[in-house]
Length: 341
Image (cartoon, rainbow, N blue to C red):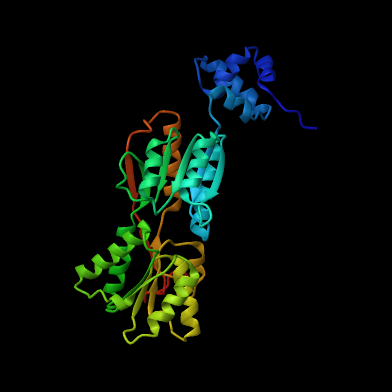
């Protein structure tokens, strides 16, 4: 039968006061190192777990982190949750996840988290941060870290993927293969990831003096279905592409499905590349050439910075923006030899 261990039992065994135990466990005050090590050893031996409710009353913190994501539709968001949750767990905190979608927008979700006092800080992934959200973030009494948002927001902290660099690199990779009619299935209007990926694509074409055909640009929604319909549209017109850059892997998966139904061979008839390097992209045949997004690094940097803001190691009012570089994963879908099989 399991018995709940409290700090009184640890204090009794260590021969010290409960206040000393509390200072040692929470690292909140002076304790002799020899005494601290004895207390920590006893706590470990007894498998002590702090009571989060009692601890929050003492520290005035909830030991809970809020994570707000767009509608959870693909692996990318699952990987972000996993990475952040792992780090939160190792600091004896809890993670509360919410999704903003058509019925519940970002502003509502953010206000709910900040007004309830249930979280000590928030990580907000909002590629479509508007003026209203930016104002909320700046006025918040709780620290907020933005993920993959426009980094030109003043008085905010943000971590993002260098979408421009990734899109430029993979488009240039196609150009160096000799492809001339490169189509792009871009992301949703108003989405900063989509905008930066399109900018990288178009600037790569301009650098190599290739035309940007408006008929070869189709808007998708970062999901498989929109990739499927976009490829059908591209292949039904007079000017057909010899290569397609799908702005994320989920849309590239839709392209594969449509190509199979149309008896279009990848890459013999049309080369295809994606963006994100989600696990499902590794299962495609041929293996999808795509942009690797270091999701673990993105999530890790965001949560560690937020925890330092919460502990006041970093001034929460201090602006900070960091863009994380990407890399290419080469499969057979672009015409390269598929080395993954």
